[in-house]
Image 1: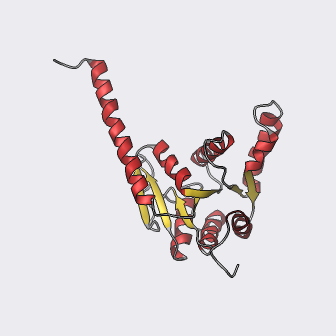
Image 2: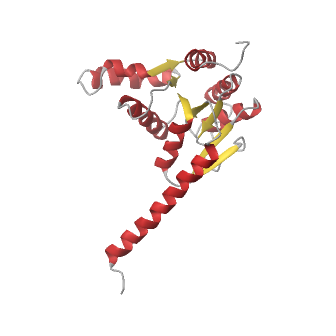
Image 3: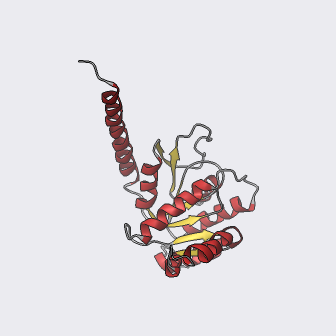
Length: 220
């Protein structure tokens, strides 16, 4: 008996389900031993000579000094900065690399790599294995990751965790719009914005996360 068109679509969807499961299993098995990790997000288009890149490196180095590992998307730009800072400081450096048609490959500073085809599986790994998010300046992909984390915490689908927006000059306009438009029209509560913390220097990020999550550095 030959399959009709609908049968073929259903069969493809069934096989796709197994691909999704395999990605989840691989992610869980690879990352199950990671502890005290912080996810760093930001633009893939930032060059190494940019101040944002240097700040990303410094944030990662400082956090590794307190026993935190670093998780990024594994790509170039600010993801590379996070992995570079972690690796050069001798810490855990994880890259959750997504296959994209026009994206560059995984950066050379990733020590533990997991490959993904599905964004939603990759997001699951970020949330499951991160104790905090540090969101550097970026584009729509960065905003997507930020929104995902915010909504999960807002709806209590996950335990609340620190979400730091780095660089008030970049994020200030967005936060002003949320307050003057979303809050004013009742689409979000003012108190819910307290889940987002804005910091402007690597030292401020370090001090805030240590105050919330503690440190493995007895000298701090």
